Length: 609
Image (cartoon, rainbow, N blue to C red; front, top):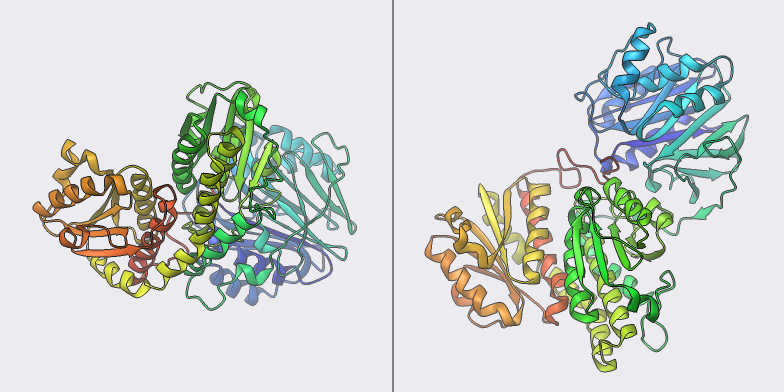
């Protein structure tokens, strides 16, 4: 959620930190702050509530100069958004500064202990216990003091720590919250996400849990929780700063909607051999492994969870393996049936989603095999999994996920086809036909995007609405769930998704004169039933907007508005059907004057439970 940027080198730390924090604004935040060690080795700290530009103006007035520093954008958890609760947090004598992403679960216990020892607290945050603990243990050895403080912390954290008592030293560490170290010519940027370092370098170290970075007198050491040196390999990031910029689009979300054809082609194309067959380098599941698997769990959160629901449909239909989909935040508390015959597929765009990581570790502890679908190479999910499917979607900056979702769907289709062909539950002809249809999806999405003006006109209907509903049957119901989430996220319009067959079981009571009802009707064997559902809605005064395959019978007669999309197999329709719903959500938000890329109360990566 929050953003951390730290710099250690010879250049102006403030400029690099502020540029890095600016690149992390998409993560969501309500306050920000910086602390540096100035030329006289004094610690200077500035914090402000609100957007980063407020902080930048104050920093400019303060003339802060130094080559070692830390910065932070905060998304409130403990304590309201305020200058006092913003990071960095300081020790009582203002010689130690700490920035923190995560939650310290035992902070109340630690705070009571520190207050009893005479320490004074000025914020409501959990983070403030950390600089006080370091101060408590500091007897002239900064490294030892930090290690002792870490041994007392329970919860999740990524930390950046500096002290005017040790002006040549910078320390950072992580546990269940992401942290990377960018390296270039003896200078270093520590950050919570890759975009923050791209203007500085594309060579990074990914830190594992409990690893500690020590930058001292210009040298880098990485140690484990016991103080032993760890040898790490530098990873080179394939995408550059331009890939994480808007490139002329008004918003990242629109840019990412338009990048979906490329993401679809890349995610599939990199997995096809010269014969047009699927080849999965990062997945070692052989036929005998698949024959041993008696059940699959798909575990994810939010949009990734919806992708998992489509994945269940595809795997069960093609590979004939039973699949259960669960929300990651509930999964490990439900005592799931996991053993060595269980495959757990975890899905996370960032690879750092806290609940998904927790579910992964619980399944691994019980003996399950882990397959991860993620968009970030080197992420925690990627490193923990037994098998890895990397979606080649490129950086996704907008909080509302679009291209990551469609890339995840492609990943599930590829897995389902690979499992089915390997097991022999799909013929050679059926296998080839499906692959060709997936290959065509990129072009078909481009056709939908060319109709954006019509979709924008439809969005005007939603702007004045107080609530709206999405309906669908079969896999269209899953698309309806994702569509409703998208419009809630960025337009703040109360929107719910309903299984159309459940209308008469209570939900039709919500339909009144003028209520917008978006009916997704792309499944050939269910179209007639959806037409009946639309008529039921019309009879109660609802305004029906249909999303359907071109030339679908009777749709034009029963719907007030129709958004037509190209034809493909029913199994693959969720990719095409979701694109107009993304555009509807986008245009509704824009027409309402909202900040599309930074919706209120939301963050891109949910790295705490």
